[in-house]
Length: 147
Image 1 (cartoon, rainbow, N blue to C red):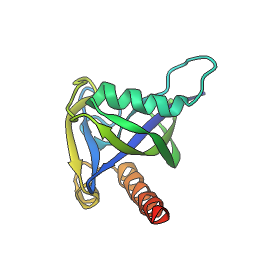
Image 2 (tube, rainbow, N blue to C red):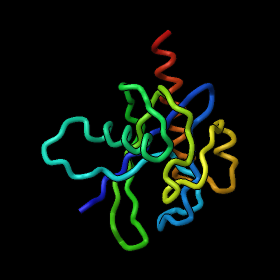
Image 3 (cartoon, rainbow, N blue to C red):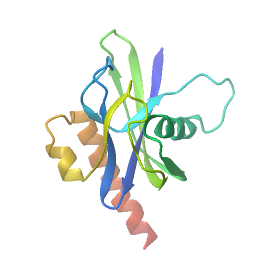
């Protein structure tokens, strides 16, 4: 059985919305991350991944994103306790709100960072770097198709 985790790669004005995970977090505490969280059981449901991203963005950092999201990538990993996680990243367009560490049990700090800042930051784990690079490539592709 897997936990399903979703993350939002939120882009605005050449920067990504990044959090520093709370040091209280068991998994990856103190590291940089996209905003996201675990999908909750709802029974029969539609667009649960997208609604989970929206919920997590508002609960953790107080922002909203636009309706349309683009799939970036999916990966799996194991937690320290042996639980298996499916992680799904979506490219999201910022809509409104001024991000702040709304949930101190989950978020120590909030940043708008360029791709280079993320790739060169000492607390950026490889999975964040990979997600940002893939989201950036998709963003470039989507922007080209809109021209």
